[in-house]
Length: 196
Image (tube, rainbow, N blue to C red):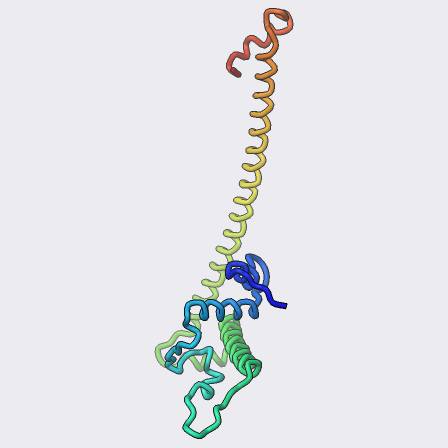
């Protein structure tokens, strides 16, 4: 069973406005676009320094004449890229943990060789962290206050609109009633000329 989709529909399937990216649909979309603009068979020269190819660089070198072409299955290449990504995330996590941890006395002594001042740097780092924490708390409180104000403004807007509609309805009713026929009942309302 085969059917066709517009590219815009395929984009909505591949990359929904909220949700998880469908990489199979995205892959199919990109290949469809490449075929449509006749670029599917064009080659791109790479420098070899690209991070996304680091795990499979040996596959991209052109083979010698007579040699069988080495190929990796797409699943193997995806696994290599995933392993590379995991190792980079681990490295970033370890660097972040090193920045969060307070150095030990031995580390301070080791780094105090020469003109460096590790105690002063540590003190500056601690002060900077406290300032950042204070700023985060202030921003969070400001955002909560702003949200409360926006909620109140919206409630006031709804109330004003309701009041406006009710005043317009009362004005229509007042105009339909003939005041000379009921002077005793409407004498108190004649002072409300500002409504009309």
